[in-house]
Length: 100
Image (cartoon, rainbow, N blue to C red; front, side, top):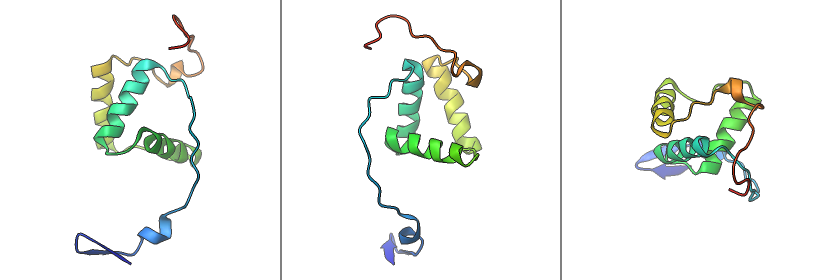
């Protein structure tokens, strides 16, 4: 049991898993990365933590975002000009300097 701001937290130890993380050089579309970074900041998560959450939800066939978060994502997409959709997945071709 831990006390967090005067509230006893019983569930914390039940759900925490010890893991090993690996640094990776994943390449992402520039505007998509900007939206993800901004969203992670807004949610007070690291980019890696956000991606882990999205992937783990997807692996279970669950939606990773609430209606409020989807609204934030729509706003961020507009800010960064991200017009890609799920239909574009696996049909993207890189142009320009491939090194970044």
